[in-house]
Length: 343
Image (tube, rainbow, N blue to C red):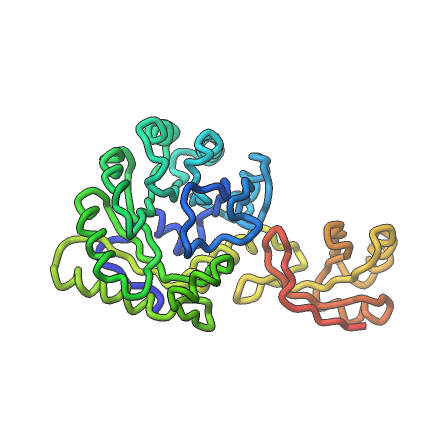
């Protein structure tokens, strides 16, 4: 099971399905400490900024990453973006100025920091869609949802589904159903920093890092509301679907933007290229030497190597040590998934 939904998908989700959203992580700071928070040690409770895989504070680099990704919108996340509201506003304003009003921006936040002032700021800079993550077991802030009535094109609730939480989630949906436009139910995944809590709650982690029972619970909730025949937009999204579709499509789009003349893009959007690894001082000399063996080549200072067409790698390997055919992501970190040494 990858996804299931009733009614139309939120506009932000429609872009995500095509891989057309820049993932803009504005801060790891958050007023909540959810036991299922998926953030890494590097991000959680740390004031760091990432645009997709790029760690940066530079707005120009964020805009460049959006272009290289072929993005038609951005999903702003954290932490809680409202904990750094002025920064969040600055980023939205810059994205809208660079790409126009049609560049669709949605934002994830809890209800904890929501107030009239924050809503007014977000509305003024053109935020299209806002998604809330209410505390499932504490309803004290739920009434804050009334502050956003008709302020944005779409308002939603998005929560991870804890196994056997049908009763509480149905209660939550019934409370918010006339106050928001849609609900997203996400399959619960393993949170590396909360291993003790997962064991305490007896949440069993599957091989794909999803939590056993989460999907079944989500489908039970969907089934309940299908039987009521109420016109509620509810979307279930599995961890497999996020990886296989959202992430994969984003990778393929970026590959088309960043691939060199000599690169081959495989079916997964990974780049296949030849490479000679050497010390940085020797790179120019080696590039000149291989000019007769390959038509196009480029020096990659970041990884201290020369990259070129993979088809030429075998003949080049006869003359240069540390020659390989590599398979890597088209992302800023150029993560290598496979390195086949030829010499």
